[in-house]
Structure formats: C-alpha cells, structure tokens
Length: 111
Image (cartoon, rainbow, N blue to C red):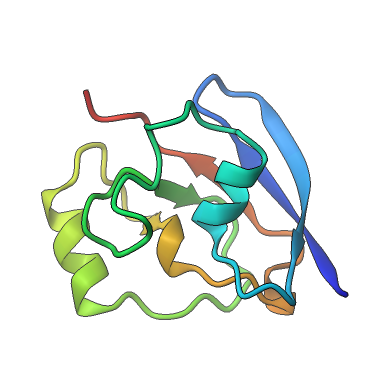
C-alpha cells in the first residue's frame, strides 16, 4: 500500500495534510469526503460524475502532473460559481503517486 501526502484547505481556511492511498482507485473528492473536510451533502452531490461542480477546488501548486480537463469537466466549470483559472473538479483527479505534495483549497459552496 502506498500513500501520498496531500494538503487540503477546507472552506473555513484550515489546512489539513492527509494521507491519500494510491492503491484504492480513489479520486480527490473521495479523499475529501473520507476525511470529512466538507459538510456532508455539500461535496460530491452527483457522486463523482462531473455533473454538479460541488467538489470544485483550486489547485495551489502546479508541479504535479494532473490529467487534462475533459470536455465534461470544462462544461461543468463553465456553469459553476467561484471559478478561477486554477479550478478543477476534485472528482476528476485520480489519486496517483505523482500527487504527493499536492496542495488544494476547496471552493466555497454555491448556495
């Protein structure tokens, strides 16, 4: 089993450095949910299908090789609130060894 360290800044501004497993086929949204870093029912509403943007986050460091945005992810971000140049849907970021040291901030909930 291999874990990577990811720092996630929650919606209150508190940083959490968590261990994310690379051998469980998880994505970043699932890691955020498993550590309960966002209120239940406010992240991953669509179940990770890139259909709601509730899991939007901001990538704070770019030295990691992230997968390119799919058409579906781009389309969903075009409709989302609080979008920045570094916005990504965390459900579209698989946990891999290349993410060790990644830093993200969870976007505000769109209410």
